[in-house]
Image 1 (tube, rainbow, N blue to C red):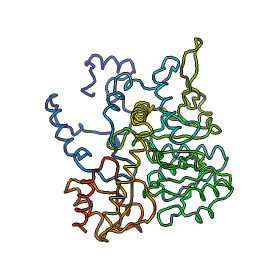
Image 2 (image 1 turned 180 degrees about the vertical axis):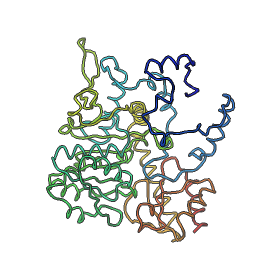
Image 3 (image 1 turned 180 degrees about the horizontal axis):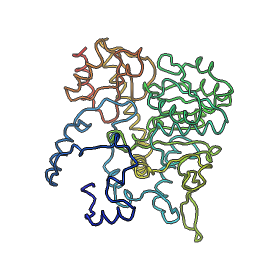
Image 4 (image 1 turned 90 degrees about the horizontal axis):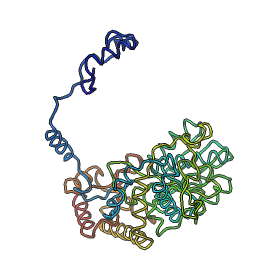
Length: 447
């Protein structure tokens, strides 16, 4: 028996007797001996609290975080400045322990925080309605694909190869169990090839997914894409960095049907990969097809402001076969911190963050390419990420940068075999001119 289960020997015998067994071996008799674990776990002896603390501290120091390194890595997770008020408010116990509104009529605080978050996301995207509890941008994109399939009653999704590789893999995983075919659209010069997209569009295509700014950081021209997608009566799904929407056209202005993206950049740490926060927003027409929770504002019998779960589309609220999704875990705390971040910065602050990302990334690009030791991989307009091609091994560049205390860019050859020695660099508002100049100097010496 497990030593950490506090049962006495007499307790164990009594439980076994009540089940009709004489010993533990009888309890597991249905499991063939050949596949049983027949030895003790290879664990060290127990440690005191002090020893465990020292051990875990030593173990944690083996990691290098953005507190230790100057970060120029993006590719879907971003090192933005988080005002101190975000954590001071968002991690208060009354927010941190409020999990999910199972009894919404008495969960007014939780409902209000979700409502405020939803309102802010609608303002950013220009859409009519958004939801809460998307796990991350990848799954939000997959859920948007399901909305398109359900709406059009078609079984093909097109997704550009300029969309983040991990997003494409998650969408394929979701669609595979729904018998929906996912076809990747070729790219040309770092953006979606409109001719390739046009050739793939037919009466079976439910939706088209395009990322802008895309995985390479490039701002795509969605006008011709929107035209041919809607002429085919398919839905246009735009994946977008929410901070970029402070200065770029909103998905609604591009006439997208659904806007999705990763909202980690809105006041949430990198967290070694999670938890993150996906957003999904659309027009009123498709509201009833949305998964997760949609909170609305109302008045009680006394005319006071109140909040309700307007739509509850998951299986814990309605019959399973009618549910649009099985999303259960609530990302309420992460959404709350995103809301606090947006309210703290306001429209002007959000715009300033976006403009600093834009200006600093372009400054870094110009400095890196001016001596021809690095060339711009794609000569296209970009937001805060850009790719350069090195004359030496891209892995060597990153290794040397790490030795100097810099977290280098993403090696594009991992996912795009033709982009040998190309590095995707990200420059957020956190990076100073001195840090950018130092990066350039180090990379020039390596080259």
